[in-house]
Length: 430
Image 1 (cartoon, rainbow, N blue to C red):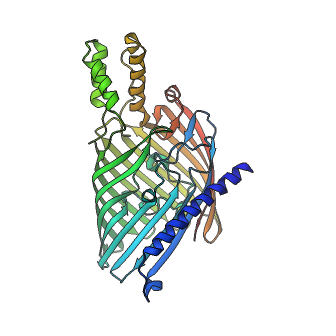
Image 2: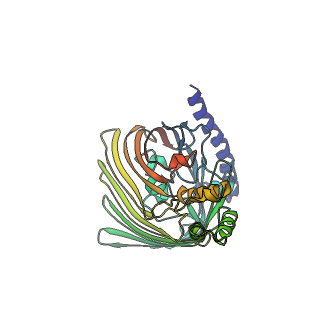
Image 3: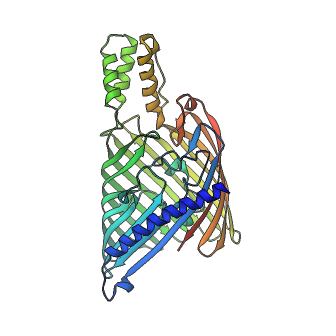
């Protein structure tokens, strides 16, 4: 009963927060005789409970989330409340915004705004949006936070969980045309983004992405969707690395033979600011009303060892049977770099040197992801605008591959293990 009360307390808290946000949005809308016809307001939400059985590892929906205080079982990870509001000034001009309250490191109004843009559509073939727009390089870009539009409790974490960016501040341009029975949409996006990124329970830094360049093409024909995308950006910000680099520099210049050589290598690679990240993805989806198939494959390359790099993908199959939709999915993130391990014993130089080595190696491996997950679940559409989902995930995480989890201690992340996660959620729109 206490867990149920905690869940509804979370929902009430976020409801009050969003009520204020909605009031602010509505107050900002133009008021005129035609305002009722031009204004639209929709909402969505998820009330989800997640339980995992390990004592020293905490589940995270994505890397933007701090560790929930309730640890093994929590209502915070998958509970979301959102609102979409817009005003159409004319057939060519529209303002739209999406605000989402969820468990994340940032709690300001700016963090809650996922969209806020002015759109201009001179013809049916073109539209230009300026402001804050969704990062459009995935199949789920338009409804990544909308659980009701998805088969699962949450998007596969191996593919979506490591990405800290939900939107960009800038502009995008889309061009649509038909070729026979196929509708094509080409889109380009330019801008920047920033989000609070948790490091520990008490520390975070602002992860910034500058010079974002996204290019995507979407092909739609009947029950099929195919999408290819490319994203390139430069990281802006360092998670307080200067003291560690200075200490490594001192050891590198100390003339300690192999230990100095190792310290020089670690210091040279310990950087994040200015890192170029390249992301290539290909996705396909099929939905004929009975069968729902979806899969995406991506390659992530980064100049820094502090960014999760590798190949990631998933495949999901679901079958609608009346009001029920059982589903199964497989997901994998395979890192492109080996884990960083000690080449020499720094304890010979004293406890401080030994601690420095362990902390630097932990920093390198903290963001590394090496895991696969089998997911089984069922969705029950018990009402017109609500669905209940029950889901079981079995993740096999390899040593030094816990980038999608919070591990209590460095040693706990050295060894691989199997982690089971049980989730239940109610998704709704209104």
